[in-house]
Length: 70
Image: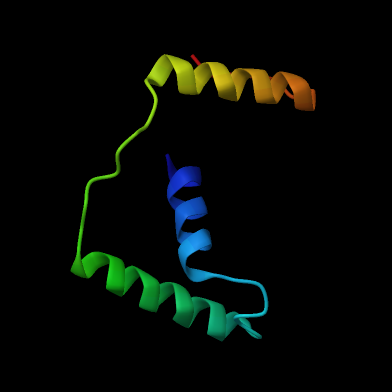
């Protein structure tokens, strides 16, 4: 779940050349989170858990890694 939240955060807040320093990135993330927190909505999965785990398993298999998804 954390990976999906971070991906959404990066897509919404961090763009190519939008920050030139670590402080700029952290300030951008803090601003984005503050704006997001003003209008909270629950995170909605678009697929069922089994379908998501199957995709993760296939992706790890393609990469040659192990899959310890239950």
